[in-house]
Image: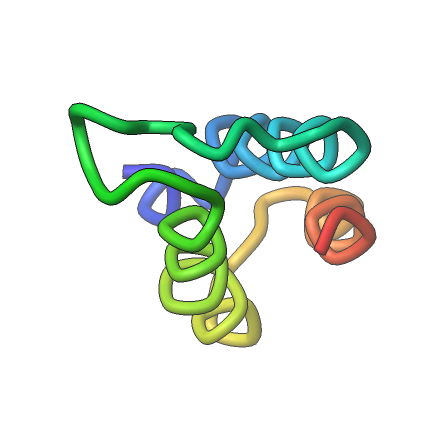
Length: 72
């Protein structure tokens, strides 16, 4: 939905979450009970759904692309 609208508030929020997790101690059992615990599922999502698609995304405001890039 975000790519269709060319705006990425959820993606930017996700990147903020990752930044916060990296800056603090990541709980070893993060996400346990819902998926494989730990930080790796977040990294997989970042690689597969963000970084590998970065160049092909369209942005309504070019500044948003710069903002997304600075978080990664």
